[in-house]
Length: 513
Image 1: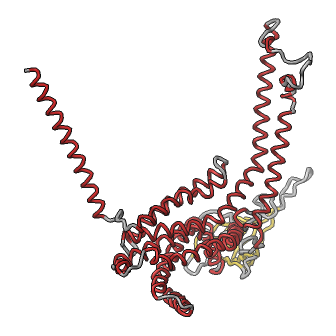
Image 2 (image 1 turned 180 degrees about the vertical axis):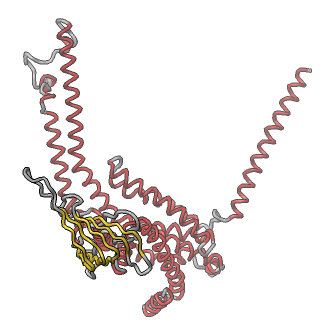
Image 3 (image 1 turned 30 degrees about the horizontal axis):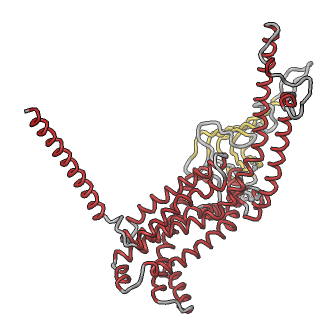
């Protein structure tokens, strides 16, 4: 499949008159990129499935429902799979060219590294554009559907599996117990308590054997019993008559139909979670941002005004010399902490303590009220910025991977995979930490959304510059050589210090003589 896609793209580019070198670079990159994207998506999908496997099993879900859940779940993993695939594919492509001496041959022919990477840069631009549209159009729809499917699956009850030898109350209104079950799924020694009338254990059915099955539409449970008896008490005691009447009915064959609810998967409205932040595109987020900004500013203005003009700051005018000039009851600093008696002092301190507690409670209330509008606003702003971070991450990872591949000159999945994981873990930790700090208000939403770009962009620029200088910074021989040179300089410096100390001791001894 990968070969067919590559050949189709190659044929299309030939029709456009693309040069042979560019076609070769396109072909060298597209194969590893499609392969690595599929592998990374599959690995992340297995981790996603492991998280929700408990919600999927024993629900009687069809293959189509599980396939939809997995498909929409894989779409939500694009922000992690696409940058990692771009990084790994770029390292593999340039590393393979270097390992096979093709990169060296191109340079010997007078082709610069910038010219070699240029066609790959065009592909990177296409990936950036595709990543933006995926982040803005596909991923919100995926989150909306995955939230809806997950709730529908959670509301679906597990399939009825009655254990042997214990009382089972998984069926609403009934408690069942079976003694044994043979290979033909025929149950023996069946006991059924009917609690639908909520009047206690006054309706009991005993049967020698029977079968239990669910109707095809999963709307009812059909219980077929053989050779049994039903005991039923009325429990209608009055003040005059306290006796109980019991009805006993023997039967050779009986069927009981129990209505079931939520045992069949029911798909709800797709737009149910359309108001979630993750399920909105840029246009919707901008509208929410305007309304939330207005609500947050109104909340801050209201609470600030209430705090400044509340009862516990009722004497603020006395502290304003511009407003109370000539006012007889103006605040006089020289009379502060002067009391007529001890009782006035105690009352003053008590009032001050009470006012302080009131102020602390009010500030806590204001903080909680403002948080209700500030937190959704921060999340909306962050998600607006993050529509662009996926595209930037793909671009930066390309300019990290291509130079590293040209420097390391190792193809395959070994060395490139290790290097890619290290850089991706750095990106993931910084990105998640920045998002959390921004949501909490510790840093601004802009910094929280673009902090991974701020950290990795200088690194990409540095690696690109080193690759254009034919650096061997990642060459193992260079590492060994640098380590040997470091220790040689260290030992030579130690010898010089030892020699100087020896000479100073000899000079001191000569002076003493």
